[in-house]
Length: 156
Length: 156
DNA sequence: TTAGGTGCAAATTCTTTGCACCCTG
DNA sequence: CAGGGTGCAAAGAATTTGCACCTAA
Image (cartoon, rainbow over all chains, first blue to last red):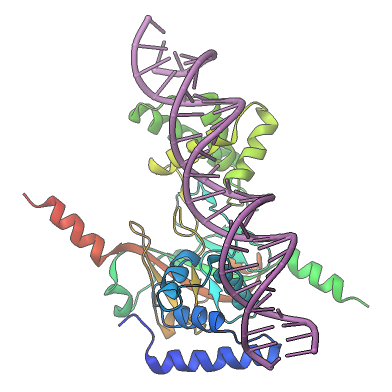
């Protein structure tokens, strides 16, 4: 199955509550609903989708609260985003087989090549989801520029 | 270096011109500039970034022409987009190590797991770009739902 | 009690569209 | 010369923000 088990959802909820308490963030009903909805979703919903789902249980919730909550959760590393964070669509004229290095701090994205990575064997858990046409490796990390800045700001 | 060589850029330009001619798409100066800018970029620019760069050479170009051109190029498979097409930011509460299956037709994204894929060896061409923290495999293909629809619509 | 959080509405930002004029084929 | 393409301005979406009221701790 795709969706997280009830056990897993409860585990995520407890972690969420713990992180909030530690960070001094209030546990409001809205936040709990938003997090729970995401914690039990298996389909990576957008803000609008989360809003629609939360609204079924809590009709008075507002879309802007959902946005604020999602970014708050993201800032506290309770959730992540697909693609590169708050970025808009980016375009690529490189149609040859390649992979991506993405800086999680500044969004910088660069191509790299590797014949080995071009030909990965996928587990059946991936193949049952559909017919795979191609695979792409996304290496996430900190680019040189951002490393440099961090090092500098840490200087005494 | 990151950016495509001049040779590569010229190769892409020729292919672009050929595809346009074959598809009956007019080769306007705006389109050529937009495509060239993207073909020689190594950084996966957004529409706005392409616009700014093209404007330096062609001050009268408009942002909406850039948008129209980018999607046109995308429709003709002369370029691709990062992330999943025209989608908005999507969120993920799954913080354990996992990978993604993405349907290129409908955008459906699902997680799958593989210990083998968790531990890929990256080439030095990737490692020179920055400090890699984690890697993620993105398997692109057609999900079952979309396959089914295609099969049905092909029925006689 | 009170600072942080929420809902509402308005503001921004990003992207698309209608239309008259222009230029490629 | 004709039909597709462009720029402009306005419309539409998506997302964020200001503010007065509310509520978790």
